[in-house]
Length: 464
Image 1 (spheres, rainbow, N blue to C red):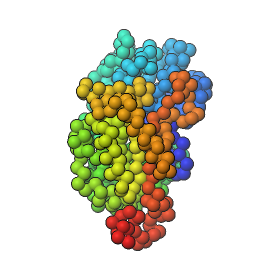
Image 2: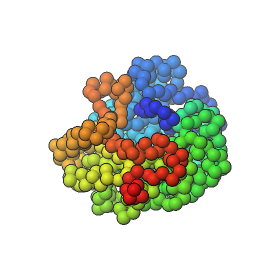
Image 3: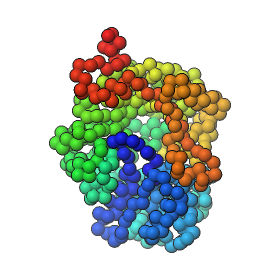
Image 4: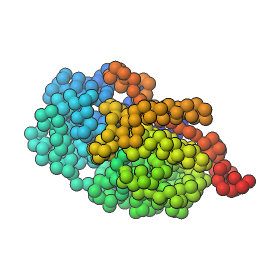
């Protein structure tokens, strides 16, 4: 289920599902017809009809926050209609901790397996192994009584070049934003983030693999590159391979790039690369309180941050991302962060803290005293935030948005999606967006066409 409806060239698609399709299609030991059923706004009945029309023996669900309620209900109905079907959940929400939450607890009766983390090898093993022997497959979780229990952990795949590409196999849709991986994992392990470290920082796609992927993007008439790595500059070898592949193929310079940047590791080579394309960059700051970040296992120093922001703002459309409701923060501390970033010459996004699996849901200490919505995983109260204080702060954000002509929206579900009907109540994880109009206009007009024009809000611009 694709939750985005994005006008313009940025057109995300269900990349993970097509990754699994490619893995099954390319595996010589799998004899099966494989089909991806995807969409943005089908009704529950529409999803069910599409699956029944294909009549699969094995049904895999790529489960995210926005799709879990609909997909859990779909799985129940499909299993009820034919108990012989094997039903497998993968994706970020396919975790025993999520399935143990009250809204999904019944799924242990109709979901046959969860695929944990990397899924290409696990899904092929599941379809090639008798169900009685699934307990020997690493990297999955299986029903045991009233809960899911994990098997042995699967070692990270160090041969990323050996993974089948949906673009190179001609399986990906045309005219989308091509999702690109240059490495897997993350060198950090922030408690609020689900990326974590997959256990091997050497999971890097080679120059040859990335060159072939960019060429496949061209052939698929992709509208740009959506970098799904934890950050453009978090793995130096992966970045070098990407930059060299782009220098040979020249795909990104003629389209657009959407990516994340880790501020402390920004170098001149990253700025030069971003300047060569139409780039949109997210800066995941989360808070200006370094003690708070340290408590969440996120090493960060604020010393150069203003200079980093101004350098990025001159070469890419830049948005700073912060979180309201982090355990250990407070309304006063959050306001200091917000005031600080709103004074910078870029746009700002505020996300409501989510209690994600492989992150706060699994790793938070008891002293965080978290209470959260079991469907959206949205924080209600925690250390430093009473429920009333957090609600008052989010109301304050909404009032600020109205005053500044910003945008308040909900990340999911789309208004026409099925989630509210399935659950019987409206839902949506809020997002507050404070655009910096001068900054966005500067990039909308085309910074390269402006020649010596000065970025509004930069030191040179202020001197003028």
